[in-house]
Length: 269
Image (cartoon, rainbow, N blue to C red; front, top):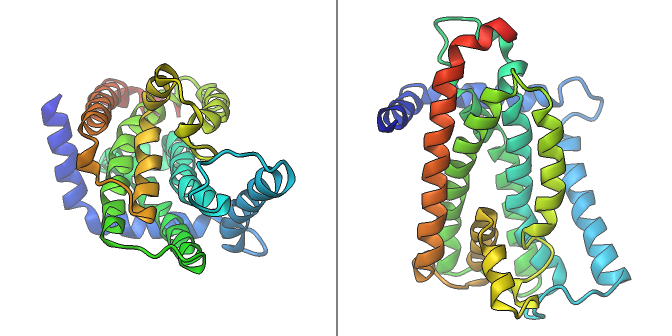
């Protein structure tokens, strides 16, 4: 199992140029057939942010945060990593079916395909991080050294997604219903992750403990700490250790499932 992870890292390094080219082509082809092209990549997330902001802050005036920062900033800094997570999970799960012609080629290393989806969605993620940064500065919240740890939390999220998409992409050719299952889970997970609310809204320590078991809590809270100058990641050693243990288990599980099911991909695709 440890060899599988080592071989994967080796394959990523050896195929880095191919991965970059593949991710660019994947990003371009996603909107190639539409009239407005890449505009739709920006429009949908922006409309989602504005809708949540209008409903919860302007309409309902729901006190979902601790009041330290405007709700629109709190929302943007939490929803940016969520967008990346949901986009990668959705596209990464279908990657072997989408590129079935590559799966059937013996000479092509299909293990790197989920990583290509990680990179192709990274371009939009970088754009929305920049938008959130500009919005923060417009509200008088300027970045400091803490902002540098956003690269750490992005790396952490990419490692977590690597193991997760290995697993979901490997079983999707055999169980197509996994897409519907993920869609249902994502609806519940959206509200179970502190994207729209602060964990301080739940003073009960038991409830806080349960909410922190969600690995995405670590990433979303980390993004906010990076934007707002909160704690460094090493100041939360328990959460950090828990997240990386879960991520490592997921990487081992994903690589094992991929290795066992890979020989049968061409039979079902």
